[in-house]
Amino acid sequence: QSALTQPASVSGSPGQSITISCTGTSSDIGGYNYVAWYQHHPGKAPKVLIYDVNNRPSEVSTRFSGSKSGNTASLTISGLQAEDEADYYCSSYTSSSTRLFGGGTKLTVL
Amino acid sequence: EVQLVESGGGLVQPGGSLRLSCAASGFTFSRYWYHWVRQAPGKGLVWLSRINSDGTSTTYADSVKGRFTISRDNAKNTLYLQIDSLRAADTAIYYCARSTATYLEHWGQGTLVTVS
Image 1 (spheres, rainbow over the protein chains, first blue to last red):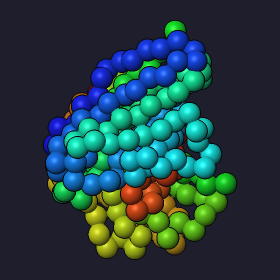
Image 2: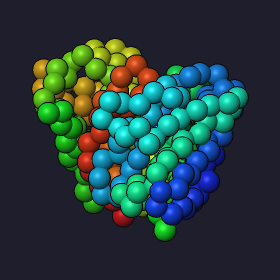
Image 3: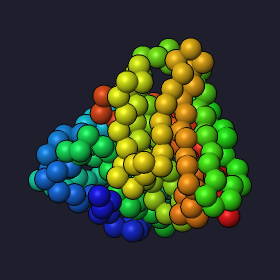
């Protein structure tokens, strides 16, 4: 099964907002509300930012938000901060009862 | 504090086997499902496998089915991943993760497997 499609990189200045898209199919993103987003700083454990499309764990900043339309999910980060520079991955449950990750997006804070 | 600590990685020759472990602490290990995910050098995260709370149900990515075996020992609070017929493409950092019903909630720091 092919990975979900994410842009390879995005960038923004401190204080700005950015959105990362994640495109799948009706067998994954489009078929279930089980999309999650993870932040990964190299050398560290990945951390969940968003689950079930638009839910945020209590310890995650409100600057992170998620949404979905059809086969495409999106992660928006508002008020960009230097520490947001990291790799971001979307993930979805699939019709095969497996999980699928996106290829990852490298966020650069200018 | 929830802790997941992977071990068992290292340098292995092609065709060899390896068993990775993930030791859990700080919570009731037997209540949860677990996953293995890997990241090859310079590449993204790839989901590999998951196991249910009592070990009776497992699922694998098509790319590893038949070569990878996920298992657990609830008495030892430990998750395992057996990897057989290792190939260069298996070189990666391997992460274990505890999951809720719908997402991977806590991750370990990973263990590096190098096949060469």
